[in-house]
Amino acid sequence: MTPPQRQRRFPKPEPVPQPPPREEQEPPEGQKKNPERLYVITGPDGVERVELDLVTLIVARADPPPSATPEQAALLRLCTAPLSVAELSAYLSLPFSVVTVLLTELVTAELVTVRAPIIRQALADRSLLEAVMHGLQKL
Amino acid sequence: MDFKSSDTITGPRTEDHLPQTAQAAVKIVIVGGFGVGKTTMVGSVSEIKPLTTEETMTQAGVGVDDNYGSDTKTATTVAMDFGRISITDQLVLYLFGTPGQERFWFLWNGLFEGALGAVVLIDTRRLEVSFDVMGRLEERGVPFVVAVNSFPDAPRYPVEDLRTALDLSEDIPIIECDARRRASSRDTLMTLMRFLHSLAMTGALRR
Ligand SMILES: Nc1nc2c(ncn2[C@@H]2O[C@H](COP(=O)(O)OP(=O)(O)O)[C@@H](O)[C@H]2O)c(=O)[nH]1
Ligand SMILES: [Mg+2]
Image (tube, rainbow over all chains, first blue to last red; front, top):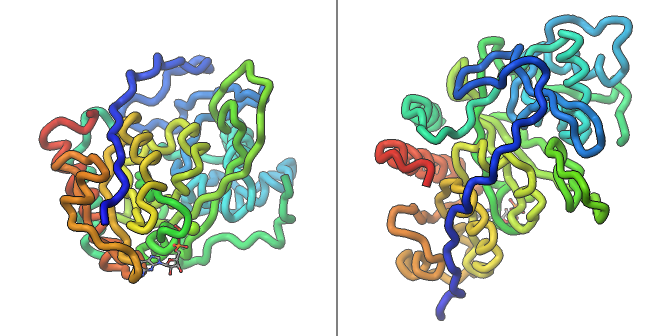
């Protein structure tokens, strides 16, 4: 029996990157992470959002203030220890983009800090890959 | 959107809390057709019970990405399972099981590109369901390995026949795995990591 045949594809030319409108500051560079430097982008729905990844780690800086909405208070209580945006979305049963809107409010109000993920780079960080391999080996 | 009142929200168990020292996370995407074993693989290696995140997507654009000027928008809610592995006190790995035939995932800029790499799970009874996803990964320059899930009644092809059928170059690992077994799933992830490492050594990560 012969398996069906696929045809390989090749990288498409990089789309011209559209720099998102930014609020006064430069985006984070490379693998450096600076929680205070975040893009704020306006989505197709006109809603402003801080640029967050599914695996950006969120940590509450403070207890929910009396002015917090129930959603904000719930979110703040969840991330007393670092928690990814994906986990927040799962525990709150809210879509990712809704969570990013909530988090934008909390970042602006300085109620949470944000720890940016390490994303794949053109020049891979070998020591990072080695750390991950080492961690997997222990499983 | 329904918001559960906060007293019905169950957060992570205390033993599932990440340490305060957790500084950054990385992600790997496990992709494949329906029923191929993504959730099983995430669950077999995850230190937390797999969770589900969802996103409402439109044909025109996705979540955080702007895509103006289209009036033919169809909203779809897509869900993916994910799990977590603590690598060190500072570093966390997340695994996302993404349904490959949902092209909506590929509209989510950064989901695949931001990942270290991908595992494409294939079922030899339905090889062709993974063709499109491999093509999309290639187009975006996302490195991947292929894991063949060994279902009992699935046809077994020699690896070289599979390589030819999938039109994969020699360097791309093709391995067998049993997603139900933690050791096998871990080895699959290790194969991906070694492949990424070899690409880094040759400076070819951005192909
Ligand atoms: N024999 C065998 N069965 C598997 C394997 N992985 C998953 N399954 C079974 O296949 C079914 C579908 O798996 P699931 O993880 O839900 O697939 P998903 O749709 O890709 O998330 C489940 O009943 C699993 O127990 C495998 O490696 N070998
Ligand atoms: Mg599943």
